Amino acid sequence: MKKFFILIFVFYVNLFSQIPEIKSEAPTKELGIKFDDLLKQAQTFQYPVLDPSLLALEKPIDPETYIVGPGDILSVNIWSAPPLNFTVQITTEGTAIIPTVGEVKVSGLTLSEAKRNIIQKIKSKYIASEITATLIVPRSFNVTVTGYVLNEGKYKVRSVDRVSTVLGLAFLPIDSFQLMRKATMIDSVNFRKILLKRNGKVINVDLRKYFATGDDKYNPYLLEGDWIVVQRRDLSSFVAIYGAVNKPGAYEFVQGDKLTDIVEIAGGTIESADLENVEIIRLDEEGKLKEKLNINLRKILNGETSDLTLENNDRIFIPEKRTLKQNYTVTIAGEVKYPGTYPISRNGTMLSEVISKAGLSVSSDLDNAYIIRGGVQFDPQREFIFSYFLLKNFSLSKEDSINFAQEVGLLDSVKFVSINIKEVINKNLDLELQDGDFIFVPRKQPSMVYVFGQVSNPGFVPYEAGKNYKYYILKAGGFSQLARKGDVKVIKRKTYLWYDAGSTEIEPGDFIFVPKKIVRESIYYWNLTKDIISTVGAVASTVATIILIYNQIKQK
Image (cartoon, rainbow, N blue to C red; front, side, top):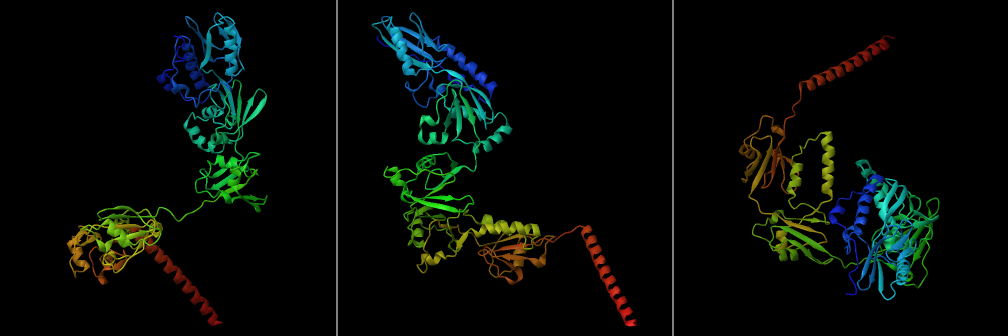
């Protein structure tokens, strides 16, 4: 056999699942111990297998860009007879010690350069053999995170981790207070101006552009000694983009930003975007309109014109091409054979067409069917909502009046269409439907009158033509002890309007409400009496004073 499978390291999934979330130095050390123990185990396996759930690489390591350093573990194979295999860990001095061969300096080199040096060194002894070197376990090391984060400190990371990885660790909350604080902090982090200090140089990390473009330079891999400084967002430095983009909003401004940069950060445009008529609005220091630019973004994307350099506080609007060719629908529910949502045209679809398709059942109550216009989501059993209003006394306290006004305001958004479906079926009348109309055909109910309030047995009473309200109250057990007999009201089934019971004809479905006597404590009447006496006394005193003055003037 000339070649064996590439040697890889075994990591146990259950061991990884026990690793705690990293938040500061103490958990970091615990994770480091586990990780280092696993690294040591790599040297005990001749043919280790890497568990991908542990490293969770976003993509294969690029040998041309990966920088080798102390702690990396390589598998060196000499394909001779018999073949030789060595698991080699880069030393703290940055060298690879190859048994029977010697020491090779590799720290700071790319993986490709390190492999060439190792192979060249081995070939000086094993001239005729085929030699390979493969990275099987990336190293771990510490980096420092400071600035606008939940927890500043050192964090153990791997050479395959990016700046975004360690920021996620620095924002892990350690208690409930930090959990609440995290939400506000994340929204105010400047994700486009994260400073990475490395070997005396400062690299600007732009995470928004990285997640928009995937370019490694905006979110580099970490190296030993990296120092990351997170800055707070400056609310006066922004570029906003609205309209036909996937993620509209205000984003951090970076000097040199192009129009296409912000479009990419906003997730790109949607299909219906009008790229030829993009508008950029600029204001002066007083917030007044300074300049309005009309840009053809399509020509920029096609390379026909140069990209536009943005200024701080620019606001971009990408219009959306609207079309009348949309998803117009109506919904019909209740006592029909085929309830559901039906497609219609923008105009010209009549109610009779939809009713014909849905089909009425034998138990349909056509007298009380209704239509709700405007796409309002409304419970088909509107009686549940209206019955709540019926429980309100027609004489309301100040507090109840406020609540009642709010509840009535809710009904203002529900637009009921007055329609006689019987006339529609008989082709004497029809109605043109609109997008979002909701048609409800209730179940036919027995002819009943509902009696409630201060009666002995509130509930439904069978309707009897020509009977007045007293008949139905008697059928409901009669008045209770606290009934206000002179204020009985009738609420009409169709309009829900209140009428005096003595002057209203009772119809099927009506409600009869008997209000309650207002029972007050004796202290109320005592206070009322005192107020009356005080008032009468004050009036009498005033009158006496006036009479006295009048008599004195008369005597003079």
